Length: 247
Image (cartoon, rainbow, N blue to C red):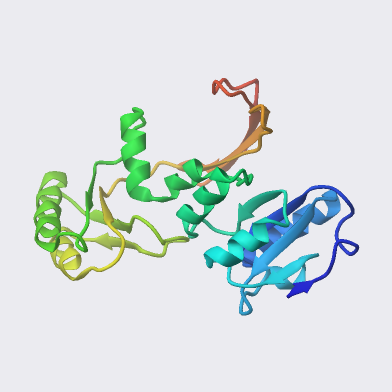
């Protein structure tokens, strides 16, 4: 079922398809409308958010492979409301020539185990961590968790490698809680991290074209809680053009 039509959309031009009709899809619709960007949203019947503002709404299951493939046939580029979508389905679409943004390789970094391993291999500093998988081998996971907890001499942060967002599937554990927690846990593999004190928190937003050129905005707070914004340009090589910071 489609609500709206090409005539009611924001004019001619490429169609951006969005998988999922939640809060982020709603904000995307609201931002796209004044820019004349045409959106079409695949949303489940119970989704709240984008259904009220999407110029074109397709009612269906945004986690169903057949529904995603059918939906992708009517759009020029496919994006997502959140990263908890079957990456194998998106990879198959990419292989068939569908433009998926962000690409599946990038979406792979939503898996915290892959993210930590890749960052470490690239030389990017991360807290000490261990990946344990009670679902694959419970006794080994418990033993590995015990060894890791002894090595960090303090609290441990446990995170589901997949499926968590907005603080969900994250547990702050005292040393004596780690092994019992891992022993009764079921779900995606766990990333165990040493608990560290944070001086500041940064979120970086990058917009680019296919030639890897575009502006970026970095926002964060320092140790005193003051907000900072930095704007600058980014090239493919990672060189940053002149930017400015303000508090």
